[in-house]
Length: 389
Image (tube, rainbow, N blue to C red; front, top):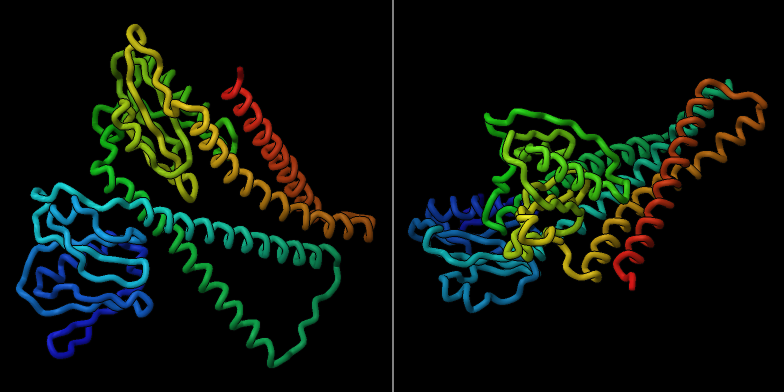
């Protein structure tokens, strides 16, 4: 903290990765008599003026332009702006405030960063796989590895440290932003998905492990959960990985489940009876699970997407992400196979290392080739089903 004639500046690294924590920190500074007056986003520095202590609430916005009239009438005022970032303040208490910010643009920004880190991690995996392949080839060939002393080795060492630092920072950013997006989405709806709380009356625990790269994984999961409800098991809690399910004994109920891996759009369907009950960690953006109860004697089974265009768009986004992961893994294996096969052909024999490596590589190639084909077939069949005349 630096002080200069009534002005205080504080540097806060990675504040944009911890938006809600930063908002609480700004509120705490306000209670100490420091009111936010400026932001240097490049220097990661916040500027404050010494004022009377207050319980002001702060909200950080990204690419949202000017304040809507409804928020101005509710007491929100601009505190500072810097680039695409802006921070607003309200002196009203939480009970008095009737409006709040929408987090869509901030969530999209975080998702773009998550996607960039996902690509980076795939490149790292590719690089590591290539290095392992070279090491295995050297060990299996029976040759000797000669290391020549050189002052340039220091550059190799420094480069290695830089790569490790970037990797550690990337892993940290990945998990922090994924959790931040989940919290932002929950805060936008104004409620925690209380339908899935682990309570003492939970009597049954069931495990279900499946490949989330499968194109029909969400449909299979939805059907399985609906069958549990029909048998009298009400879903109470799901772990973050989406593998352990806790149910309580209840009356038989008719319910429609829907699961997809796109941005959270549950608020649009809340008026139609859908409740979002789960945000998963199975991927960068996470799976969302929705549920709607209905009376089969008086109404049809609820459908999440009411028009073919929106449903096909949701399927396309899901298939696109799964296709990207599958293609990246397949390319890594296909680029390593010729090296190993060439070594075996040259030496006319295969070591244990090479046999294990070739077996694993072939398994991955077959598995992910089938996954890619399944994704194409699933998208084609879904499109024909939706637009069938």
